[in-house]
Length: 190
Image (cartoon, rainbow, N blue to C red):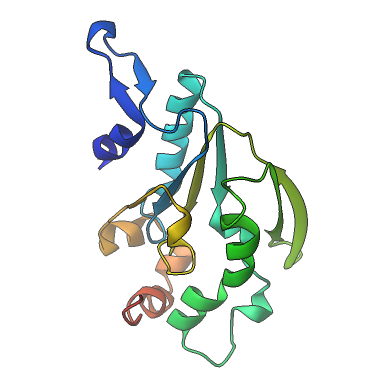
């Protein structure tokens, strides 16, 4: 899994041993998505990629899609099934399409809501993005039809349900129904 992902970014130079050179996205932004369900290893992979890109002095900007979820009242106890709330109501899908995804390639700044759990509020911030950089967007459901066209490349981290469940906090493991309701009942998503 990781070797394939790294091969997207790096090309080994035969005459330089372990030194890597960037093989894609010279002179522009490269929009790379890392998709996968909760606890599949997305954040770990992002941090590893950040370290590798920093070693070769490549600009990088990382967006964690969970930083942009909406307030609880808009995503929980809406009368819909839990899987539906999780897939369709966690984020303002259209707002992120228009204000993040549609602008990320050519704008030097974007205005985005950042969720603050301790206040259950979103706070809008201006985010500056370097011109020549790798933009990594990490999160669940990135391949939804409203967003997928904006990526240059996207990978899905497939991790067994049992492994992901063991990585969850003990409080979540104690509520297995929540886990099943979020991921087990989902209908086919296009």
